[in-house]
Length: 447
Image (cartoon, rainbow, N blue to C red; front, side):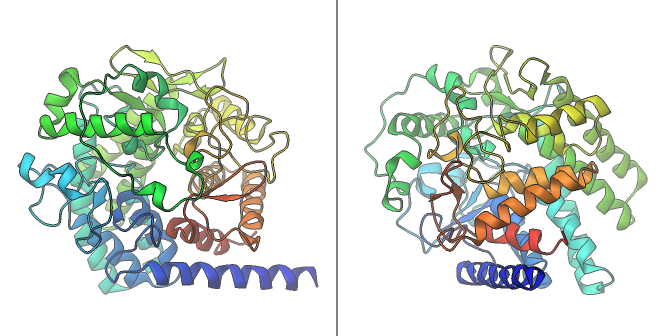
């Protein structure tokens, strides 16, 4: 009977998740959420494609094709591709002015000038494994591969010109963890100039403003965009004296894993050996940067402020980034797993479910309901689950998966963007596409 009830719950949850993706589907791409996010976001679409692969493979690859159709000539994939029919959004395309300020930006569609974590090759490799021997699908995957390669070359060349093994970000929005305590010190040092009056879009769609970044944070976000426009989004100009430059350990770990996936993909497609070897070297370079970022005292990998060369000493889930690497020294692997499953994260006192919160409860900057300052995120937990599986920690992976699925099965969960770690209250937007997508992927894996 227990198995029957469990299977029924899984079936209901999957059907609800598929319905979320269906309702947010705009034909060639998927809105991250019905109201709060009306445009196409870069790493959202990559994760959505992974979920869609279990439902409709053709629709899954179209998600990536649509996103890469907005690729800049320098190879970057913008963090937002704007939906021309969604007018009520801020900051919109006119605020970024990418096409009129940068010769690398496409004239159409309108995009932002930032990037986001490069999970795309991981998604495309997932589609390859799912496609098996479908010749039409393999042809479309092969057609996307060079665009993916150009994206990786952009990141390696322009975001790590000194070959430190860590990617530099210019804005908290590039990390995907917008208002994390990781950025507090760097943001406090920024003097905000005169900004035009603006109305935030996000606060129209959440009941409690404390769930979102503060107005002071938002002013700094917009000021950074203003400064970026003045550089014409030129990496060389930005890196001379831009006031926010952080070597992002989580983004770099994702990039190492993505290079590994792209090398595997290239090998399967019969790409030149030299090209595949170069991708493997990139994987080693960025894995090395992440490993060197490990702090023995905090038992976490730490970001580094590229302007001061100082490590950012906060306790967030980004510090678990080494788990995402394809290969790890045994000692470090065991340390990361112990930290993830320990009292600061999944085994925290008073947690509603044994899942990973975005910031260690009680640590500097922790706020239980505020965006990346405390809530648990399905997407982050999915990444760490994937890392646990890859490194052979099947029991711990199964426990994390089961805990998050149990959370999502609650009637009030509504595939929320993130959740209060102590009460499991759904926060942010509801019917979030990538929450539904990772639920589908979790459900596709046997316990």
